[in-house]
Length: 361
Image (cartoon, rainbow, N blue to C red; front, side, top):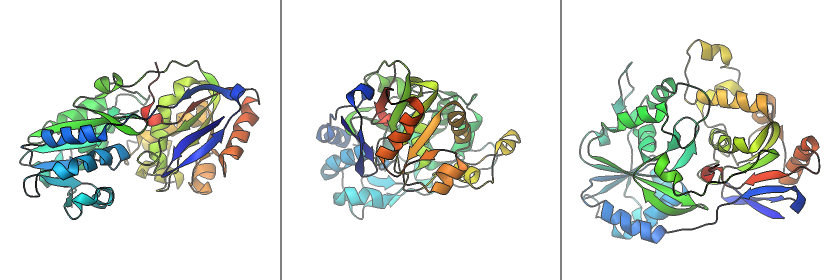
């Protein structure tokens, strides 16, 4: 059977015999971009700015559908972390998307905000996804990560535990929500995708999102194949790592993971880069040292200790193999050969084409 997993802007073909396929978790595309775009135009009436918090395909499809009906520049200004990434997909907004100013460097115990958020009214839009630290990254968390200084460190310190949590209101989520509540006149729209297409827009967080996803009940298998979700989800190893954890309950401890993600932008977090280059380790964690993404060191260590991991990506061998001690492969056939070398040729593998939409019962 041929299974196509999103891989950056393209797809990677994974070929499995029928007897080797356990559960195939492959959400069917169900898009409502035009409908959601019209609803966004109505929702934005009276707001001074729209902050596009990410560049995921679902987000940009809704923005493009809304673009013809957006109020003229000057009534509703459009901001983004990366204006070019928005304008490349939404040419109707060419020259109109402003860059969100970085927040001032915070002092101890203080939250600082991007200047654009200090006054007026703001509508934040993003596509949601499960996350091991926040439980669910909705538009509130996305706005906080984009526009509030020191929020990542504060969220890490508030976590309470290193074990991943998904679709819960974690202490880290609650902390970010409390900070975002200080933003003047803010409202939020979180896009919930199905099969990579924008399906619904919600105002709440993980509890509301999970009600729109189909939970999958699977018995733990000897191995799993996990695709992060392609463009918007697998640009960095950091993103692939965080999303892959959502599928771990479907594999036996000591089993095999095949992670599929392009990682064209490299490692993605400061902590992972420091770990890979020998500048951070367990000693630094014990001493209270912090770098952005520090929680990912715990996730990576647990992954390496409990499972055998094969990575199919464009990540340099120096990082993937030498630093992280993963097996690597040049293509999916070689990757599967290594997995079956551990599990046995008759093993069944669960396949998740989009970990960004995975919800296990």
